[in-house]
Image (cartoon, helix red, strand yellow):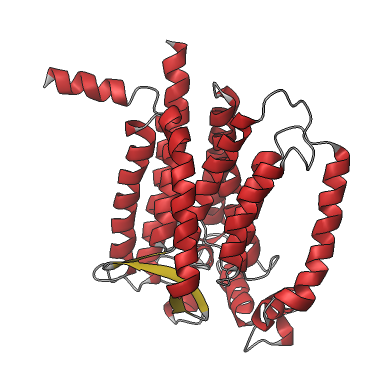
Length: 372
């Protein structure tokens, strides 16, 4: 028993417990909100599924954060990248189609969304790619060709599913990591101009009609209140009706009477805002701000560039999901199907999120080990 306790202490030395408390408070809020959005039916149902995925995600978190170290993770990153790209290609060819998109891959009795796992893998592979670049004080587009290529491959594979929201997040997370290395201003100007040009091309030749409707609806939801603008309008009604203290647990009219679509996934925060009000929203905002501060602190104290870039990638992951989802719910951003991490329903996403937390544990354990 003593030997087991010593082994436990050794393996978990350096674990950022305060970070884990913040993470699981958000998981608890998500499950509480899920129970209400599901009408109070615990099992079978989404609440039960989400709890199971949270447990499975915890196992994945322990695998990445405790059983592996950052050196092992760095070595596994290439293999993980190849596997996920192969899964994305399989989805594009034979994947399960739902709601007009081909995003799920059946692995026996389980359906998984490889595009979610791509966000996790892109964090690792971008961080590792800089390990091969030695003696470069200022990067240009020519010296960043590896990073550009490894981001574009999964970005395009996700984009053709079509999944504009997830592909955009893959691109944003990778670029967020690159933003923390020194890039010359000429290259930044070229990228900005290219992005603007590609946006014009995408609008005219790439985007589907329903994706264009989302953008137009974002500019004016009332142009089609019973069609493309319905989601945004119902979400804003739900948020506004919550007031200061909220309507109370299972008392939200928009969610309980099924006026609010996707109330378990994309608009889970709308349910929370309606039932818990402005005060409840402040609690969630406060926990996310605390979480991001804790992640940036881990990145700042990291002992090597790979660990620092991994932590920054995880920070970008949480930052973009939080910002886009809340802005989408409040009508400040088009509806693009981005979940609120740790709160919204989604097995693949929960697995990905807690795996990312595992990376932070590995980075912090590495710092603690080097400090002794």
